[in-house]
Amino acid sequence: MSKKLPSREQALQLLRETHCSSKVIAHCEGVAELAKETAEACQKKGIKVDLALVEIGAILHDIGRSKTHSVDHAVVGAQIAETEGLPESVVAIIKRHVGGGITDAEAKKLGWPKDNYIPQTIEEKIVSYADKLVETSERVPIEPTIVKLRKEKMEKAAERVMRLHNEISELVGDKP
Image (cartoon, rainbow, N blue to C red; front, side):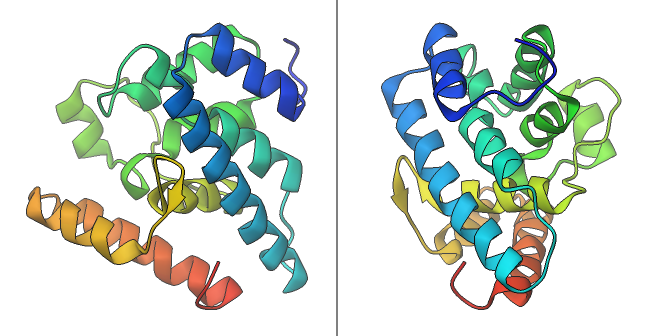
């Protein structure tokens, strides 16, 4: 692929070619649907959002799950995306979507390459947030995710996800 954004069908084909399971693909499609709705809601409020980037980034956000189901799927997925020649904007979405973002200290503990793993752009934030609201392919409220993170002693991740929830909710209202 070139450095231009793939089409929806090309992105789905890439998931299949890298051997993502049908469950992962269904999840990615669910995240893409919610992310696109959220991006459209942002646009209606006058916020500049690249809808195509949100949709394609959301479809490809879990491409790393073709190789691993650990938190490392973000780094692995970013490497796959780079190898495939995807635009840096898509690579960044993949790299920054987990846990509402991963701090430098957490990345170091995980043995990840030194990089920025916190969502920066509105598109990155929308995909990261939508990912927290889609379990398998079903939409879920944010609260169980927060509770789960806290039970797993991941308080900082819970706080980041809650901040992301508050930020997106403030932009589009209570129901993104």
